[in-house]
Each structure stands twice: as C-alpha cells, then as structure tokens.
Image (tube, rainbow, N blue to C red; front, side):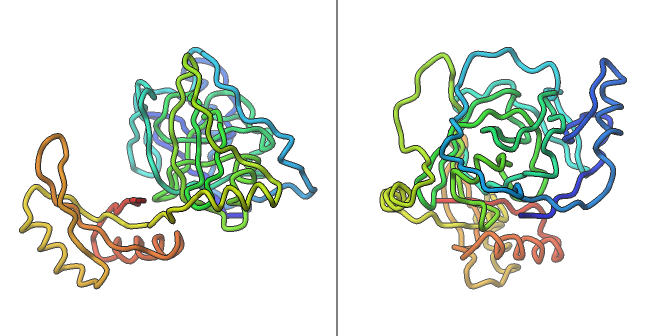
Length: 287
C-alpha cells in the first residue's frame, strides 16, 4: 500500500491517469480536468483474496502506436518528459512501485481502462504500448507486462506496476522493488527465462537462482573533469561517497555515487536531504 498524489500537468502533455477522453483539444482538457485534481488519496490492494498464479502474463503482439498518451513531450510538476520514438533495445534498472484500487477502472493515458488484475504498467517515456519483461533483481522472479499508462511521477521510480504484476513479482509487502525492465520486440520470440510463480516452492527456487544481491546507489553527478568530481565529493562530506571513472560516448567521465544503500527508503531520505542542500536530481543506480 502507498499514498499517491495526482497532479495537474502543464498543457504541453496529459500523462495523468483517470482521464475522460474526447477528441482534439477537448480530449486534452478532459484529461486535465477529469482525474487530475490536487488531492492525496490512499491506494491499496483489493479487499479480497486473489490467486495471482492464475493471472497470465501479457502476450506481446504487434500493435499500432496508441493514439493517446504519446505526445512528443509533456510536463508534470514542472519537469518535462520526452516520449521515446522507439523501445527497441531499451534496458534499464531502477525502482518499481505499484498502483491498485485507487485507479481501478479508470482510464489510462493510452485510453484503455486500468485493470489491477491484469499485467500492465506505467512508464514515463516508453511508447504506448510497449511490452516489457520486468525482473525482480532481489528474487529472480520475472513477468511480462504491457505498458499502457504514464507514471510513476515519484522521484527515482522507474516503473509503476499493476497490483497483479507486483504481486507476482513479490514486491507488494515492501511497496517497491529493485527491478530490470527490458523491452520486448513482439516480432521476435523471447528466449525462455525464469517466470514468476506464487507457490512457496517456486519462490524459494527463484530466490536461490538470484545469486547476486543487487546493490543500490545514488548518483549525484557526472563530470568530464576529475577535479570537479572531487570538489563535489568534498562538498558531500559523506563516508559512502566515491568516484567511479568510466566512459560515456567514448569520452572519459567521472561519476560521483553514494552507497551502497540498505533500502529504497534510505535512498529516498538521502535524496531529500541532498535536495535541501541544493544537490538536485540524484538518480538511482543498481548494480
């Protein structure tokens, strides 16, 4: 269970959930007005027992790009997001969250109704629809979901899973999980991999195969000059801060990271403290 806030985005885009859609300009306005008022409403799980082992993964299929939910860019809470032209080759690690009863039955950004019992997800920039495999890096369990919505707009969250997908991945209890998200090309079959299961034996087996425990870091800067990286390191004054030399686009780069951090909650708290010190937009790195 988690608390979610809906926010009125700028007119440049309309990624909020639960819109009532019409056409043209009226469509955009209805998306802004129907479900995006400023309010804090409790989200949660269904009030009945559901056997998620009987809920099948999404089946990737070739579909046209959604008519709705794919603006070139949009703005939420003062930040602009750019929708990717293609999901080909997309792989990213980050923090997954989930959403449930608060949005059940409401319109998603693509225009499809949100069904918390289906294998779907929200992503800020992937084209709608996109099929992705989401793997829980902490227990090895994996599911295929259809991305048909926009979000999550909480800092340092990569993907917002439907309740069913989160249940199958085993992240309901904590509310978040460390995941890898990998786009699937529906035109080419995917190699077989470990799938999620709700039985205890299968969960234990999956956990035993997730042999490398993921480590969570916050990256707070990346510089072409090592001297600048060292300057930030001194400003941080944190024992866990360090410099990671590397390359980006064939150029030498020095990344400043903090960690490993013991939990998502610790990473969130640290990000807030850094922001208060004027160190903006740290982002999560998982290895």
